[in-house]
Picture 1 (tube, rainbow, N blue to C red):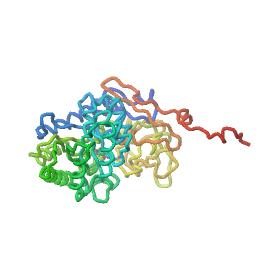
Picture 2 (tube, rainbow, N blue to C red):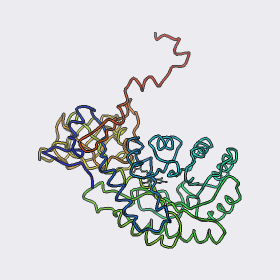
Picture 3 (cartoon, rainbow, N blue to C red):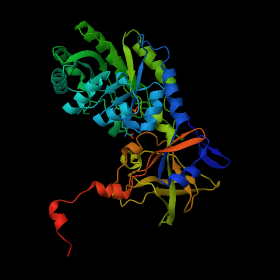
Picture 4 (cartoon, rainbow, N blue to C red):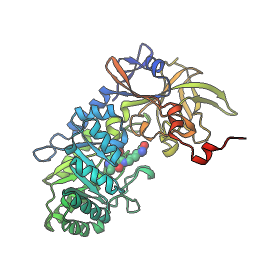
Length: 429
Ligand code: LLP
């Protein structure tokens, strides 16, 4: 459920007309709904009601990569969520937005010594280690700083998540986690390292999961592993079940499992584990809470179909070109007429296509259009390709709204470059 609705014939974000936002912020721009973000955080938390998770209850660590905007993170921090970070940059953002360090988990296969030191200084809740060499490095960094790093190993359970290959992470050919066959040895070694305190296990098998069976299989393996680890003398007190729950993109497709159904599965599989549970949801919290608002530049008649050329492009929303992802497309002020068109951006690549031969609201030059479900992995994956400044982001709350990231100007893009000395001196003939 979201808070982007037609009121008096025109799409609003909560109580604010999207057309009013476009007038001030320009297009393209991302627009987020506070009420939707808060609702999804609450729904996810409620779905975990009754899971066994020790006195502190589950730690819901929002996957910052899904949407690192400071206003989004601050909204979630106020709703009590922690953060799952995968870089020093994300860690700094989470802290700047007010996420307490003791609610932060650090994932990722390539943490550097500098990033480890930064996280140790902050005093984060847990490092999710993805390899034995990473454990050795973290121990060295921690010892040098006089700290002890709380760690879990992310286990690669070798299950097929049944999602797009580019966002599957739990198969034996994927780079993520410690292969299940090596896990016992990795824990045995980590237990001897002076800079580490082994406290948990972690798993994350992929994103946009629309079937719970692979997660159930992975969690069941983790449950068995917790028993084996304890039998081997490890004090396992946390289990991080990752993120991955899918959201509806295409209304013609079956709905993905709801947080409540996911929660019931978790409750059942984790009963008796006797750990604090951690979760790293990203998309399910912010996906439907954002739209990309864009304006039709012109409609061009091709040989076989009309092309709707909008002022947003693949650099602003990469998902359709990268994963053939479906985003629902709507006119902000629909006329009631429909047509079939291919929606493209201005970038000089055929891949700069949002939808092919889509049946949609009929639009003409100057009309506003939105791509729905763009709150997760939208602005965060943007680039400046074709020298297009990063898109602004707007946050709405009830009748209020604010620009929470300004449009990147071409001047700031150009001034980030500099000429080497030999080109400074030379004059162009
Ligand atoms: N935890 C870890 C360790 C992850 O790698 C991810 C996502 C998450 C949590 C959050 O997963 P979520 O709940 O959002 O599914 N750019 C792609 C998605 C990449 C996901 C990467 N990892 C897309 O646009 O579909």
